Length: 419
Image (cartoon, rainbow, N blue to C red):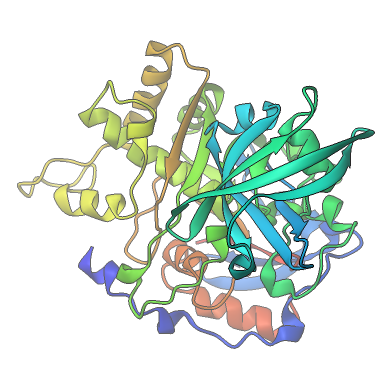
């Protein structure tokens, strides 16, 4: 663990010119370029060819989260514009209940132009579902760099989902350096997005079209969906010299019982679409570990802390290796079975918990065998995750992408990693 904690983030830097950042998507999302990294060799194709590279009968897991229109703007009587960026439900804390909420709710938010909002509520007259109402925002206590904001609106029938759909703005990534456009409401969502909650898209999924999904079906690829609501922390830069000083953000995950069963049926292995799916899937192993020690844990107690994987690796020996005095690590199938047994025991159709997992060089992957992902920012935790997956060979991949006109970041091209 100490080796991982002392990784120097400067070793994961590369020069990314602004013109290589895709500001808009291609007209046809599945015509993006596809970099193929297979057993140390790099080649390229287009995304529609993806099924040709995948083993028939494999299991693919995608993140079905939907980006919400999380930015709200209020104008004070002085003319000052205040932006309220909804990050995470506070009351009610559950995402599904939150979007059904009527008359009032509370969120943890980031505030733009905070110095201009000294006291008192902000109000705004809005139109939602053909009704004119007053939306009020009142500032509560601070939680780290966020603030609790209490929202109220004077209509018994309108839900919080109605409010956001009517006046919220989609929060496209800050590195695009442009305002949100109407087209982003469609292009910054995956075609299979379903569950509202993210403030950033799981961007590897943006390349998929129904045409590609049909081709995967024809190729015999089974598909399952998980939900990880992407937080604004995904854009949080690593400011510490060593990654030990970087606090990973917490994200909320939901995995259905059927998905656990499918993973077990596929030997605990799968293809992950995007780093959010990777973080969800790899967290499952450590949720199994937590259940092996506390079978009656609540879902909140099944939260995966940032350094849990490395602490566990140090305290155990790899499954199936000679006895060295440490207990044997849990087998992947055993870990998944513990989750399945837990869900059955409690009559739960799905697992709802959270993860703070950081995946960096030194991490041992348990479930993900093939990864589809975009090209990530220099010195980011996502680049550390990719490096861990390709056994440190990330620079070869990125050098090729830079030399061969690949487009980078959220609206950019994709890669298929098969180490």
